[in-house]
Amino acid sequence: MGDIKFHLKDGSQFVCRAIGVVKYKNKILLQGRKGKNTWGFPGGSISCFESSDEAIIREFKEEIGERVKISKLLAIVENFFNYLVEYNVHQISFYYLIELDNNSELLKIKEFNGIEEGKDLIFKWFNLDDTKTIIKPREIFEELKKVDGNIKHIILKEI
Image 1 (cartoon, one colour):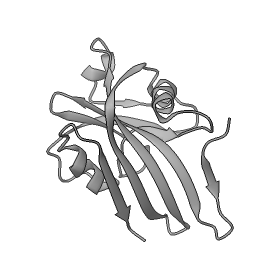
Image 2: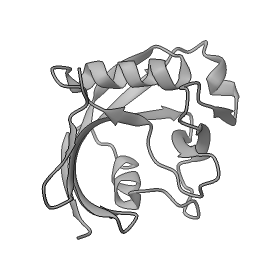
Image 3: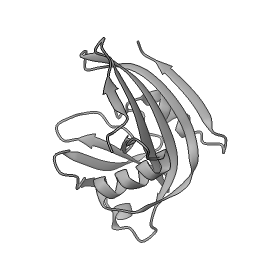
Image 4: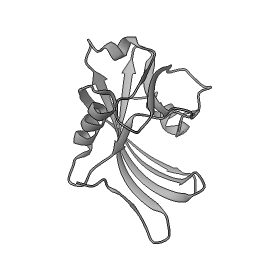
């Protein structure tokens, strides 16, 4: 099935994503791309007829080769932003708190490469108190640091 991602006649894009928030001790796992200076939460587009929880499990298997366990849904985020000055994006994302297996070697490695072909992904553990790293969207990072057990509905309008 194809991803729930499409361009509209006006050039804008709609996308539906599943995002994983992995915390370990006082660290959080973020992903970036080689040669870029920004970081975000791991995840990807949801495929048509795939649930968001199925998507995040699939994405972690594809990107880092690990099976993950979903703890709970943290937030549903509606994000409106401009992508690289090329087009406007309307993105709906489901943010899940997930866990790696306690025996995962990835819990011991500060930075590692993703395994998905052609993506050039890098994964890195960051301190939860980090204020210098360029994290996109920053507002989500700040909100998710305050996880209190309640599902949050967050709307970000940058355009």
